[in-house]
Length: 230
Image 1 (cartoon, one colour):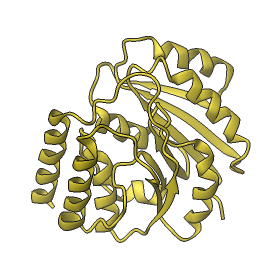
Image 2 (cartoon, rainbow, N blue to C red; image 1 turned 30 degrees about the vertical axis):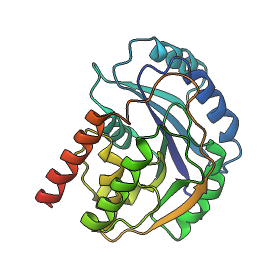
Image 3 (cartoon, rainbow, N blue to C red; image 1 turned 60 degrees about the vertical axis):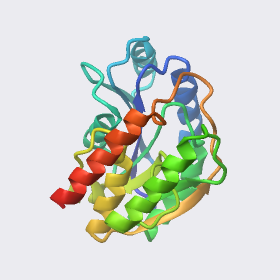
């Protein structure tokens, strides 16, 4: 049985080039999901390019859209944690504001919640810098060895989570380790994870900061701290 309410949320930082396309697409797809109560939540992580004002204008026309602002840039992990805390749906889905996965994939993901607690996407084909695939392979291996997370694509930002999972687990990450910590916590508490293949769409506007050495080091550092505390 499908959840009666669903929150789809997007972390957002300086996404003026993408955000109208995102909201337009989620409004288009929402009627096809079969969910009577749908919330569209955008978490603005201290943007300075006016994308928050664009969301405000859309929210004035559509009561399903809600904006939550951070007073300053606090990091991707904090933005996702805010999204989970602010989301009001029985199930919560998120993806990034450059839409790496078409939201219509939720049509395939939502029915899987009948047997699984989380449904996550993995990229069929990757379009990345020369460095990032190496990071991803190492990261996925470490997640398997350290936390028993045996999935194809830990950090791909297409995930659908039952409310019961979010009520049980505890997230602390501020870096992109937030995706990994979500799955590690799910495994820790015995929740089931289903995977679906996703046609990945590369970013068209703006810039990703996730393939830098600084981002890799921040992620690894948080992994180690979490592993020690666990």
